[in-house]
Image (cartoon, rainbow, N blue to C red):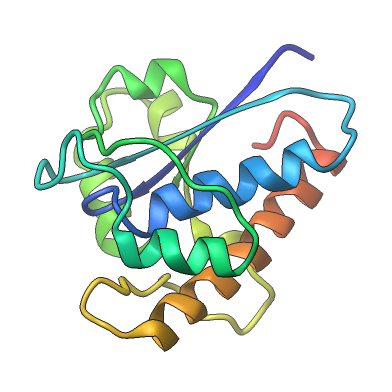
Length: 161
């Protein structure tokens, strides 16, 4: 298999999606897998283009021994062509992405992050932007669980469909 490409998407690309990108990258780099994965993140909105991840998220990622890097960018239709799997952090982001679909193959690439969480988990990864440390910690825990689910799914089926 060639490189599998995953894109994490939230609203502004400064909290949830860059955290998911960095957590998943840490998981991939710390494990020997028979496939390679390219990981990126973006936002559906243009509020924070060019900005680094929110400082509070950087601090919490560091507390959980995760790396952090990147700068915010906005989703563009060409991402449907560049990525194999596009994972929205919540149903609003998914709806925004679905509005940009041009063909059935685009739609087939879209998934909700909670699809990879254990049964009974919330459908949406909450936006911690207006919350305190506990909100960021809750999101990181959800992202770790979901990234593990994505990795397990990839190990079983590297072509995820």
